[in-house]
Image (cartoon, rainbow, N blue to C red; front, side, top):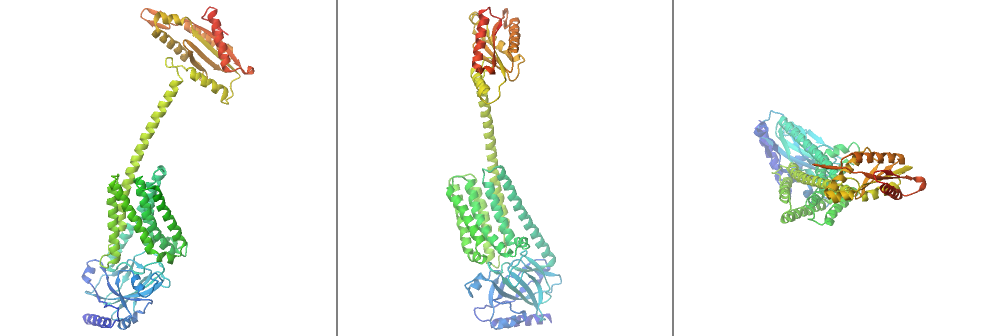
Length: 596
């Protein structure tokens, strides 16, 4: 009996289709392989469907419409825009259509099966009309059929109560700004397996989107710590463009925006178009900064400027106008893709680092893009891979940025080390220029700078300052008798006594010249200076300044002290001169004494 009904249904459909008016083509009954369904395989209903644009024809009237030639045919999956172009110049206009296809099952299916609408552009409602029934069953629906807006995930699963042959009917209403129709396969599969596959696909998409988000933050952090390197920022923008496109085409963006804006559909469409603007330009800039001096900067900034102008225009223009300019957006994308290829070729010819690696990754992405274009046009090939290939592409770019950042970091470390070495050398040279090379005491240059700082740098000097000047007695005869090497060792010995004396950090001590030494004691009265001078004089007198074998040399020194009182407004150099005069009084009065 079932076979009789099946044969009758097929015969009825064939007779009906034979009367379709031109340019209608014959709609064949789609034979669903029940054995494949039992095995859990997916059956895609890729075929010629009956197509009527402009109305949602009641399901019960479809058979009659077949006989009256109201239906054209259309390949599913595909965009209906080419068919609409035959009827109206406004191929992106708001519109509705009816799809229908007769199905026959080669075997009875006992397991629950479901219908998967992977991507119907717009709102839709799906009916199933069994052959033995005049009452259509609603399989599922999504979106608002009155305006075509569909704020939800692309890809919906609907229980399919197909226990016999019948007619599958789909009403579609598309909103402005979108290529309408059944854009990806309508599929039938065992419910348990389909649910599992769709859930797995959703998990993968979520992981991919999450991965893109992590990459964006990762590259932004890299840019934050290396702001002179724009490659990380531009790669973050490439990832942002991919994420923007992914969430908008999947319907996620609409879901997020719907609670806060009634224009969620328009925003989602514009976001998808903006991603077209951003992706190619940001990657073009990425390559130009990765391989510097390859392209004039004015061209790079011109590319960024064109993207900025395109962004402003896309935001301001009405959404239907934006969609009508789709070919211009694609031309813009194609132009910058050509520019990217040209940059890579120039980089290869100039033997730039990374050029071949960039070409390899670009070719992988290009193959994925070509595959998806073919899949969107060919009903027999519906494998979309660009979204996954893009991650392989990003992996290559991440390696490039990582290598560049590693080199930049290594160069930065080398520069820091060189800077530190130069700073140390400078400090050493500066210190040596202010120190007496023999005694390690300050020299006359350091004395001059110290006096200038003491008198002119705005610090409040102490009310009194004392100066000690002393000279080794009969030093010339020591040099003449024992040689200058012994004389130098005696000078070092005197300097060691000064270094070892418990002077304050604020006190200044220097070799004034030859065998003459100077000590300045800020804040010390002249009595304190005389006490220190007497202590040093006694130590020198009691010490052996040089000893080698049987040779021992003892020395004495003559001291002069003077005091600077701020009330006199005398410069410090005058007081030093007074100390020097007191020193000569000590020499003239018998040496080895302290005078003031």
